[in-house]
Length: 330
Ligand SMILES: *[C@@H]1O[C@H](CO)[C@@H](O)[C@H](O)[C@H]1NC(C)=O
Ligand SMILES: *[C@@H]1O[C@H](CO)[C@@H](O)[C@H](O)[C@H]1NC(C)=O
Image (cartoon, rainbow, N blue to C red; front, side, top):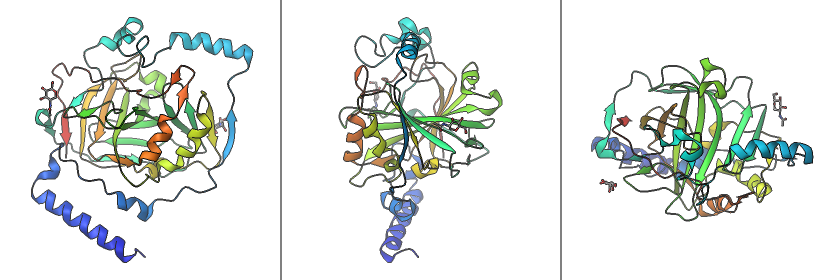
């Protein structure tokens, strides 16, 4: 039974949606609808005590540590002056390519794209067998093991893409943090759901092909209410402060508690990974519906660090579009 107050809230949101649609406003990317924050509390589970630490994987012991050090030397990149985005092309020439990401999204410069299919989401309500959160020194990454990994298809995608991992980019203040910008405006956080083309079998194989990856991106806006879905992740961030660690959850959650699936209303363009090696293999799908989080939640991300020091401002600046078409799908 939906409480009466919530029904009034739904009615108001619905009426404003109808009104905005009638005025043609929702079709403009720049006219972000206010996020329906109050909906979250109606149906999303609250974080509960059963999200316990199963184990915390300590950094590898001495012998293996040196090995992984040597490996990570080559993959050493960051966001500070000496190893930041300007330095990436020295070691990763692709980062100087012609179809790099992120980009600034300008509503005036988008083509409206009509696609035959809505974006289809499969298995996002499936609970994984296990779910691992990793502070990998660049970001917080969430990955898991499913009987069958969740997939997306439809929309601009010509085949099925399997979920591989999701991660976040954020900043040290509210004016920065997202990788994509909208009309030159940054958002305080951005989340990327990375998928690889199922036919290629793995992400490692898929990055060798131009149509290898599909990344779904969400921009975050600040709200006075916490995002209950993120509360499934945030309690574990404390365990990962100051160290590059993996945490595996005893009660893994289905990804849809982050409220990710949507059928339409997104920007799509061809780009790259936003971190080295900057491979130009990504079909980007940026939702025009921002998600929300509270200041307190964002503070937990800002408090994280890596072996290098601070783990914030882990976003790449926007890259030239070089005449690439950017599409808006309604
Ligand atoms: C997660 O599940 C996979 C597949 O069942 C298994 O190989 C792996 O060891 C599990 N990881 C942890 C940390 O339990
Ligand atoms: C964003 O910046 C570019 C380059 O400076 C400029 O051409 C464009 O008009 C700006 N867009 C907005 C919405 O201000």
